[in-house]
Image 1 (cartoon, rainbow, N blue to C red):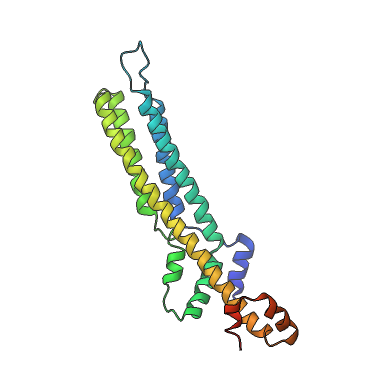
Image 2 (image 1 turned 90 degrees about the vertical axis):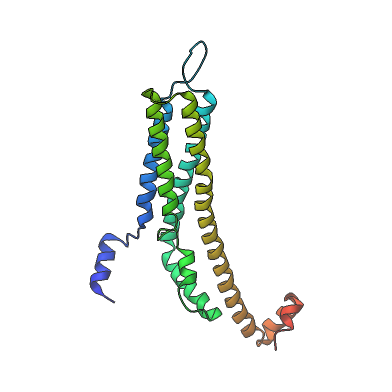
Length: 220
């Protein structure tokens, strides 16, 4: 054991992190700025003659709230992946050995979000939020009118959904792969245990009555 590494971890902790957490923070900050900009919009309520429809403000608020929920969940999911880094390394290696697979594909697929797989989608969300802010500022400065603002914002809102879905699909893929690996390792462990117990006359008597026929047919 390297004592310097040991002492550093002992004194400061392991402190695993992901560069994507910084990207999430930047995106979240921009989304919050966009939400603040939406709150500055004057709502058209008769007898007022100027302002934007309340439906547009609601649509904007709902869209940004959903986007913020995505960044929040992304942070939680990456933190969970960081907590499971060594389990991921061990499990992917064991599954590779079980299935005689070479390379790092399993581990790469399992930890892609930690190493930047969602970053491009986050950057695009940040750009959309920045564009929303700019259009709102243009409207408040009378550079564009209500109709133009509505058209711009509707187009930008529509871009959020596929980005959120792409991020969610990456985390879903990782969770499914992690679950699949756990199942494979548990199955391997149980297969070894059953083979050993089948050779014990006491446990074999019980297993003969409890194991399904398709498994008993495979045992010598």
